Length: 502
Image (cartoon, rainbow, N blue to C red; front, side, top):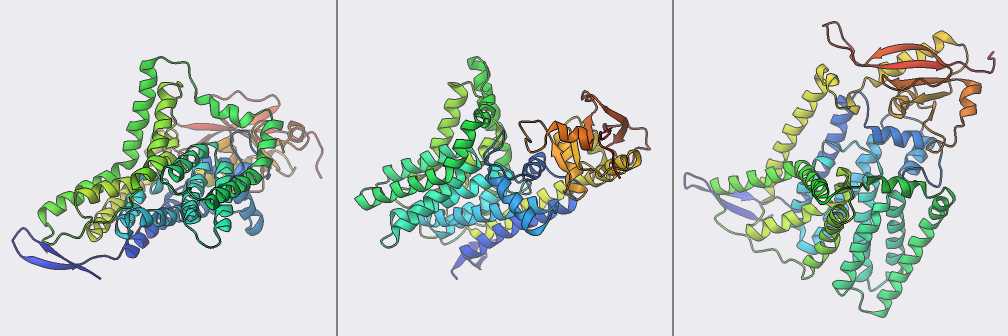
C-alpha cells in the first residue's frame, strides 16, 4: 500500500496510506445496499414503476403494452420461486445496480486504470438515480446492467485469443437482454459497435466472425418478442412514440434545457463531492504527486461511443425530432458519465481515493438524513405532487380489504381502478389479488371476470366511477388528520359479483 505525503496548512507534513482501489469499490457497493435498506425502512409504499412491475409480473407474457418483458419476467420468476413479498423490487433493483457498478469498474480498469475506475464508481454511486432512487425497479434498472455487461463482454471478446466465440455469444445474449429490457438499448448498442469499429478492435477476420455470432445470438433472443410486437399492432412502439410533440424551435430547445437541468440536479452530489475534494486539496495539498495514470489510447473513442454518441442522439431527437425528452432517459444515457468525470479530474490533478471516499460518505450521509426527514414529515402528503413512496400502503390495503368483506361474502380476487393505488392494495394485502388496468394493459384479466366475480375499485377523487360500482367510501391518505388539515382522499368502491357465493 503506497503512502502519500500531505502538507497541512501549518506546514507540517504527514504520511497517509493510499486507499487500495478495491476498498473504494467496496465502499461504493456497500453504499448502494445501505440506500436500499434505508428506503425499505422509511418508505410506506413504493415507486409507481415498482408497482407496475408487480402488476405485470402476475402473468408472464412475451411483451407488455408499454415495454419489453425482461424486467417483469425476472420479478415474476422470483415471486413464483420464493413467494410474494413487498421487498422483491428492492432486492432486484439492488442486485442490478451492484452488477452495474462492478461491470463499470471492470470497463474503467481497462480504459483508465484501477484507481481512476474506482473513483468513477464512487462518483457513479453519488448520482441520485443510483442512491436516493436505488429501490426503483423498472426497465432502466435492468437496462443499465445489461448494457454494462455487454460492453465488458465485447471488450473481452474483441481481444480474446482463446474461446473468443463463447465471449461473442455471451455478448450477443446480453445485448439481446438489453433489447428485452428497453428499446432504448439500440442507442448504446450502436455506440458500442461504433467504438469497436473506430478503435480497430475488429480488424481480423475472426473478430468479424465473432461479431456475426453475437448478432445471431441477439436475434435469437429478441425474435420472439419482435413477433409478439407485430401480432399486437406495435403497441409498445406506439407508446414509445408518445414523446413526440408538435412544437417550434423554442419549445424544442426548452425540452433540451429542461433535460440538461434535471440531469445536473441528479449528478449534483457527485459534482459537489469533486468540489469538496478540490477544496480539501487546496487546504492540505499533496507534497508528492503521483505518477499520471496511463489512459488507454482509445479511451476517447470509447467515451464517444458509450457516452457522447448517446447524448448526441438525445440532442437530435429534441431539436430535430421534436421529442420531449424524458428525464429517465438519462439513467442509461449518462451511465458512463462517472468514468468521463473521473478521467477529466485525474488529468487536472491526481485523485486521492481516501479523500474521495470520506467526502462521498459525508455527501451520502447528508442525503440519507434528508431522505429520512422527508419521509417522516406527515405534511409531505399535502403537497400537490405525487409522492409514491409516502403513500400509506398497508393502511390502504387493510381498509380496502375490510370494506370488501363488510359488503360481500364472496372471496376478493380482483382489484381495479387507478392502477398505482390498485397495485398497492394487491401487493400490500399479500400479492395474490389480480390487478385490472385496461384490456390492452392486463389482457390476462377480462372485464367479464370482474362482472362475474366482482372487484374492489380504488379511484382518485376526480376519476369517473365505472358503471355498477357502488358502496363508495372516502379514504384519507393522512393517517392523523385531527388538526384541521384539508383531507387528501381517494375513493374505495365495490363491483358486487354477479355469481352467487357460498
